[in-house]
Length: 302
Image 1 (tube, one colour):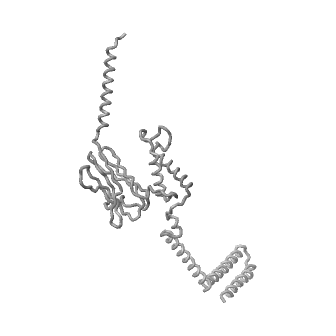
Image 2 (cartoon, rainbow, N blue to C red):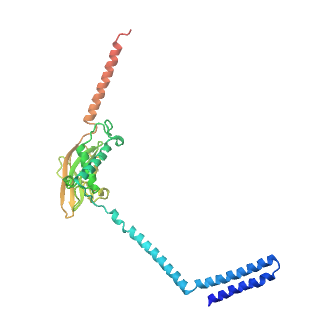
Image 3 (cartoon, rainbow, N blue to C red):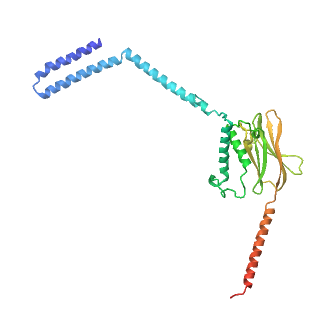
């Protein structure tokens, strides 16, 4: 009925224009009649459109579209939340061991050895006379062992099996300056291990003294890692000169404690033999310069 009413008013506006336009003498008056008729038609069309939009059919479409939009947005939000908390692509962050053929592993090992070798040369340029420490040659066995450790840490396993990183060991002691000692060892497979303890005793002492433990906050880095081949490095500071025995212990979940390794070490007095050699060298140099100056003064002048 609303549509028929709108059609009636549209027809009325057209009849009005046809009736009034010939009776208006001036051009301005005819334009005024046309504008009035156009306004009437526009108003009637607007009322008709409003009634159509307000109809139950359009309202149901709008409500359905709104619900669909809300559903899509809700689904997008759920997907983002799922992705942020380990969603469909979270498997990309899972670390897995790589299974290589013996040839592929040999290539990877050679590449890693060369990468480790570059650390011993200035700016990584491997060439004669470019060592960072000129008097210390590169240890090829140490290079290969470090390369295997790095590959193992990154999940690249030796298909032939590498027993060197299965068990704890390779304890090494080295002086750092005049009063510090570096205690280094390589961890094997984690298994049921919890952490490590470093101990030291003087040469004539009866028992060891604990220096560091995985239980202490400042040395919590001694906790066992979840991979084999990690290199632990503990620094024993301000050690008095003398002879010592260092050892590393490993504690297991069962409560058992096993000795990883132990070694003797001698920390010399600062400026010991090296200082005497330096003093003797400078003494000889001064004596040679003095003799040369003396003989130069005794030579006849022209």
